[in-house]
Length: 507
Image (cartoon, rainbow, N blue to C red; front, side, top):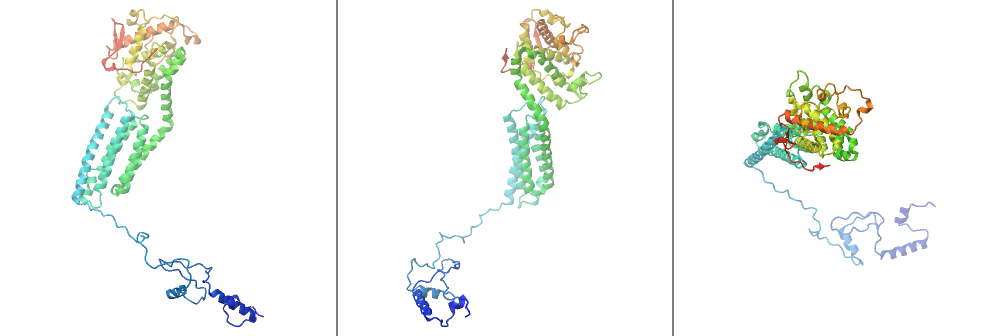
C-alpha cells in the first residue's frame, strides 16, 4: 500500500480504512474544538500601533484574517487579560513624531557689523602698541635684564591677547554678510603681516635670544600661535597662502629648538648643576680646592676669550692693529654665554669671605681684570663683574696685611717664598699674564713636581699679591670700578656698582 504524504493525511476527507481509528480521530477533534486555539510555532506577525493581537490562522492556510472574524471568534470565550483598545496613546508616552523648531536667529545689519569691526580694531591697535613698546624696551637694554617666570607669563599673555584680537577682527571683517569694502579692510591695513610681525615673530626672537631660560615659554607660545593660525587657515580662506607660510615658519622655529635641545640642554643643565653645588663642594674640600680654583679661574678667562677666536671682541682689542675697544663688531652669543657663566661662578666663589682656599681663584681673576682694565674692550664685561663682592674679598684680606706700603708700590711685589706660586706656573704664557710677571721671575731651575707644591709662606705672598692687584685696578682707572681709601685702608666700589647683596656667606 502506498503511504501518503503528511499533508495529505491531515487534510484528505476520504474514509480511513480503519474505522476505529477514524472514530477516535473524530472524537479528539470534537474535544479540541471546545478549547482555545493553540499558538502556532511559527513567528507571530509584527504588531502595529494599538491594533489587537493577530489571531492564529493555523485552522486553514487559505483563510485570511479580518477584524470581523477576530471579534466573532473572541465572543463567548474566556480571556485571561483585558482586551486591547484602538485608542491612540497619550503624547506623554510617545513623542517620536514631534519636530524641534530651529532656534531663532537675528540677522546682523551692515551698520552693526561695521561698528563691531571698528570696536575690535580699536582694542587691537591698543594691544599692538603695547606689544611693540614692551619688545623694544627688552631688546634695547644692555645688558638685557633677566625676567622671572611671572614676567614671562605676563608677556605671553599680552601677545596671546593680540592674537585673539586679530582672530576676532578676521572673523568679523570676513563675515558672510559683510560688504566687499569691509572684507578688503584686512588687505588694506596688512593685518596678516602685522599679526605675524608684532604678535608672533618679534616675541619669538626675544624668546630665542633668552634661551635656554625661556625654553618652556617659547614652546608654549609656539603651540599657541600655531593653533591660532591653523584655525584661521580653516575659517579665513582669503589668506590661505599666507597662513600656510606662517605655519611653515613656526614649524622651523620648533625644529630649531628641538635641534638645540639635544646638545645644548645637557650643557646648560650641567652648568647649572655645577654652580648650584660649587659652594658646598668648596666647603667640603677646603684647601684641596686651592689648585682646582686656580684652574677654574683660568678656564673661565679662556672661555671669555673664546679660546683665541679671531672674532672674539676681547681678542680683537688686544691684537696688534686691532680695533681698540672692540666696538667694530657685536659680541657673539658664545661670548655672552661664557660671560654669564663666568660671572655666576664669581658670584658663588666671592661670597666666601676670609676663606683661604679661594685665594688662588681670586688671584687669577684679579690678574685677568688688571690686564683688561687697560683695554677699552672691558666695557663688554665690566657691567656684569661682581665688583662689590671683590671689594669685600679684598677687605677681608686687609686684616692679614701688616705692610701696606708694599701694596701701594707700582712695582710687582717682591718674592717672599723660595720659588713662584703654583698660580704663577698655571697661568704662565696666557694672554693676560704676558706682561704681568718680571722678566726674571721664572729663571730659577725648579723640578716639575715642586711647581705645584704649596708651602706655608705662599699664602701670605698670595694675599699681598691680591691686595696689590686690587690697589692697581683702583688707582689706574681712577676709581672707575674699585676705590681704595688710604686712611681707612678699605676698598669700595663706584656708585653704579654699590648694590645690596643678600645671602652673604661669611667663613
